[in-house]
Image 1 (cartoon, rainbow over the protein chains, first blue to last red):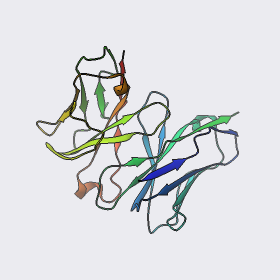
Image 2: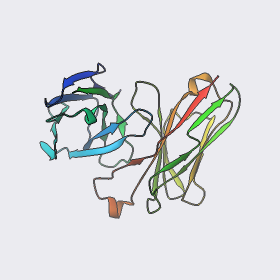
Image 3: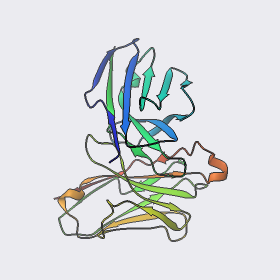
Image 4: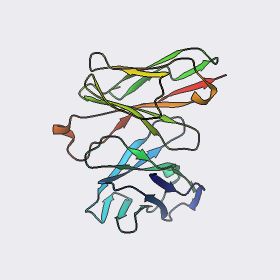
Length: 112
Length: 118
């Protein structure tokens, strides 16, 4: 069955450092991989999308890599700030589909 | 506020009761999705509408669950004979039509309805 794994342990990081999150998947051939941010009690908010034929995507302090051979995506938050503290979800989507299949999320806590 | 709205934000009910949730998508979005999220997990897909047509349903959507989008605008999700296992956050999302969304197809999520079944 399809499986999307994110580190369930919270990531505690010092302000200014780079946070790196992983998303691994099995039994899935996504055309698109997306990262969302979710704050407590709120719905997810879209951050970045990367296509299967792209290796890397950047947006401001965020960077995403996508390795379809390893079946893995890495999500980096550079120069992290306390306001970056949230849960980050990766989501996969097939080329012909519309639904998103989410990982369990990784909680990030940036300490001042 | 032009985002996705959901009502109610919280619902507490007793086991066996029926509940109905409403979702109002962003006005120009013709696609609407329902997801369910339990504590510490990511959202799980339940169902998807394009305009008023329900195009996909997850196996998670048992016969006690029904979703409608009668006029292609707002949607309702009803759960009949609620069980304690139905306790979760129910999220609604919407997205643009394919000709406008392109491959990005970003889904905009509402704040969710938190259901507690006692």
